[in-house]
Amino acid sequence: MKLIDKKTKKEIFEYIVKNYNTINFSELDKNKYFSKIKEFNYFDSAQIFDHLSDIFLEQLNLEELYKEKSIDKLSSLTKKIEIILTEKLKNDFEVRNQIKKIFFEIVKQGHVLKLTKYFFDISNIIWIMVKDQSTDFNYYTKRFSLISVYLKILCAILLKEKFKKEDIQKEVSKTLEQLKHITKLKPKFSIFEDIQKFFSQFKTQQGRGF
Image (tube, rainbow, N blue to C red; front, side, top):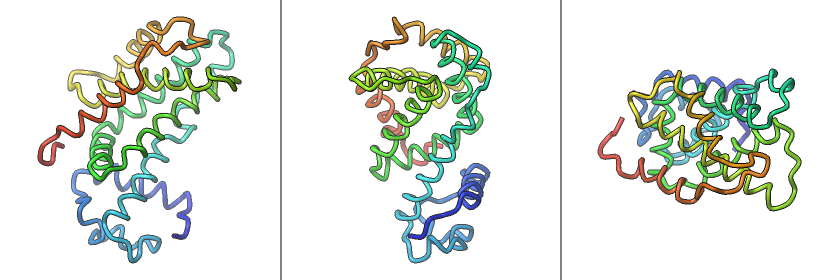
């Protein structure tokens, strides 16, 4: 398939965000908007969604959406991570219903590894932004532990109706404090259990669910 340019990807993302409630993912090949995108010609609904979900996750995870220049003036690694992760989660909060619907469809169509990679990429970007230079086993333990922090709060955003945007910073700070020695980030959380619990929230949805 011919590569889709950045402008079109942004337009596709904005279309999904605006129309997520009315999009039928089982009949994407009949959707008038997507039928106009030549890169999707001759694709069935499942193939179109595979590409749409890639685009959605990519646009959702653009580094500039949660880059905070103010971190350069800080010496505390924990504080830097707190600021960046808070900004990322605040952006997620704004499109939480869209995220929930897309995630559910990704799991439903059997693309769990796509989400796992998405979570790892988030963690990796944050560690790069705070200039982490780990090359040994700590490279992975740091990232897996930060994924746990992210998933814990994302679950609250997606699944708890009373959870507010103003609660995010407090939750990020509290959860990071639960990880001792932030520069080493010992895997106090079980990343595999967290991921399993996260996906189970979507597998148990009945009917439309949204």
